[in-house]
Each structure stands twice: as structure tokens, then as C-alpha cells.
Image (cartoon, rainbow, N blue to C red; front, side):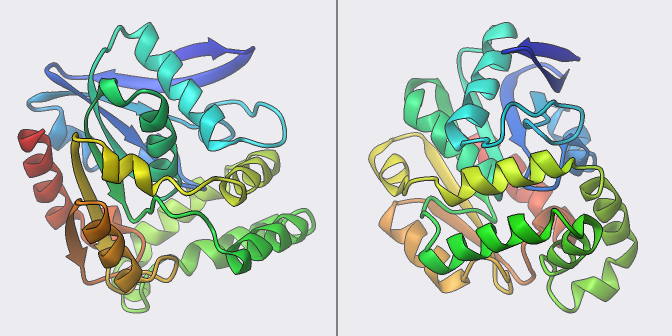
Amino acid sequence: MVLDYKNATISYSDQGKGTAIILIHGFLENATMWKEITPQLTKKNRVITIDLLGHGKSDCLGYTHSMELFAETIEAVLKHLRIRKCILIGHSLGGYVALAFAEKNPQKIKGLCLMNSTSIEDDNERKKLRSRANKMVQNNFTNMVRMSFTNLFSEASRTVFKDEMKLALAEALQTPIQGYIAAQEGMKNRPNRSPILAENNFKKLIIIGEKDPVLDHQTSLEEAKKTNSEFVVFPNGHMSHIENKEELITILERFVKLC
């Protein structure tokens, strides 16, 4: 299904009945990342997956996709579907978007799960890396995507989940360069949204990868404690939906029931 937002096409799916769960994918991903998880959650819930701007089947909208702009597209889909309250589950970039949505619409949220994500803004080193990547990707998109995507997995997972990683990489390579650059610019400039977690009473869960190469797991543990968020630590990297799929499904089903 598609929705027009500011003359850009937003692609989404809507399945099942019950509590509305919004699944928001990460950078260089799209709604297909949830294909193993959606069938489980739709047994007792209504599950909406959305392709973020510049990803999957959704159009780009300018050259900076801020977290606020991404969140506005989520809001537009929910309004179109007449959903008043929901549970947000966001992977990586999707978590940043979920927080931006929560900042503007706290009353619409029953629960928020940051999956391999954080409410903390980029430090200066990370901002420089994003700027550098945006320059490099214009000359060698395929190698840049392949390198950055492979590095999201723990070392052991790169062998164990070789086939799954290959399929996910193929999806990542479908991302347009404009979508890559616009998302990086948006992530680079996002603010610290820790107070959104700390000050709201909806259910909160942070899923942490012990060997996550992007997010230091000790920092994530401290973040969970400071924001009064429940947390779960998986033994692998940044891609919990592949590296710890069965455990993740169990955890998400439990979280949804508690919301």
C-alpha cells in the first residue's frame, strides 16, 4: 500500500487485528527486514511496517531526511489508518525515528522499543565519520555499503549467518544514493532524546548487542538504567533480527503483552 506525503510516495503494509504495532527499519534496510518477525506478531496484533523516506519503495524528499521528517511520515500513515495508540519498535535509525515521533506524540504511545538503537546523539567522531561516508559514497557506493553493512554483524555471525547477510546486503544495495546521504545527514544532526525516555510513563525496552560494533554495550546499559527502561542483552552484534531472531521474537511478544 502507498500514501502520498508532500508529493512523495510512502510505502507501507497493514496486517492483522488488535493492538497496533509499528515496525520501523534501520539505515540501508526496508520493511523486508521484518519478514521473519511480522508473521509471529500478527497472530494477535495489527502490524504496520513502513519504508522510511529514501528506503525500500518510498521516495526521497529533499537532501536531508531529519528524524522529525521521518516521524512526520509515520504520523501521516497512522492518521490515514486512523490509529490513535500504538507500540513503536525501531531498529537502529528506526529507533531514532520512534523517539522523534514520541517527542511530538507521547499520548499516542503505549510502548517504545529501541532495538540496537539509542536516545543519545552522535558524538563528534561519529558525526565526522558520517560526513566522510557521504563524500566517499558518491564515488564508490557499492563498496561503501558492502563494507559498512558487513561491519554491523559480530565476527562470528558473519560466518554463521552468511546467507542471511547476503540477502540483507542485496536489499541495502537497492537504497538510492540520495536516500543514503539524506539519512546520514539527518542522523548526524539529531538531538539527544534521552529525556523522552526518562520522562514518559509508557513501557520502554532497549535491546542491546553485547558485540555491537556501532553502540558500546556498557553505554547502552547505563542509558537503560538512567532512563528507567527495561533492557535485554543479546550476545551478538547490531543485527538482532538476524543474529538472535528466535530470542528477539520471544522478547518482542512479551513486551507487546506488557504494554
